[in-house]
Image (tube, rainbow over all chains, first blue to last red; front, side, top):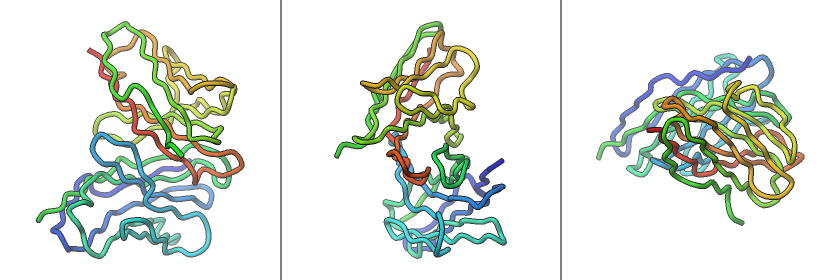
Length: 115
Length: 115
């Protein structure tokens, strides 16, 4: 069965600093992996996804993530944080690869950005 | 092209009442997923529907909860005899036919409060 663990429920960085949000997954099949962002009282917006091919994935708003099979990780990074990045971030893995199916989410990491 | 629409955005019910949550998928999308987000938790899958069919309801509580996606009209998540523990944000996602789970688009959610 698939599962996702996000290390750190709260992360605080200074504006301009590196953002690193950690995600480890467990999957019995090669995974599809996703990062979503949720702003207060809003729905989820897809930041980026990994399905196949290049393991370094670039997304919107300057975020990127690297799929590391040996470490079963898919950490999210951004070189320089902006105040507007303050939100909650969810890592997710597909329940079944390559077919319609639900997503399994981590518990989320709230990112705070200090001026 | 309008995104996934959910209504109402906020719903208040007293214990024992019924709650009906609506989801209109994106145009051309025939797959709908419902997820529930409890406070301080990630999203948990509830049910996956296609038009007139329930494909996977493994995440649905056994009692009081039901879902449908009729040939015409929105998908409905129905909660009978609500209890305080049903208070949560309920998110709907949709995806087009013929593609994998990497194409789920989320609505803004319905926040249910049970008094």
